[in-house]
Length: 89
Image 1 (cartoon, helix red, strand yellow):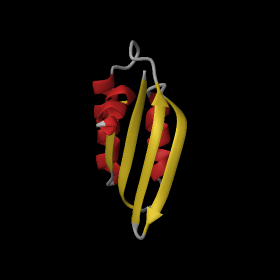
Image 2: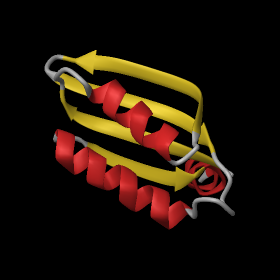
Image 3: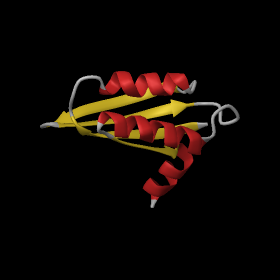
């Protein structure tokens, strides 16, 4: 399955490391990434691939949201198909 993840919040050390480690722990591969700083705010969009038979989307969403809470970031994941449909309207 392909999904889109967004990570937003105040910039600080270790954001990318925490997100990448969390994804790797669920065998999710980062296939594309874009990040920027807007003043004190960090934003990152990632395209990820993972085997939904191994890790269901809701399970990955919960795990990454928990990591986000732990590091003070808002982390959201959507199926790429839903993300694309929402942005075609």
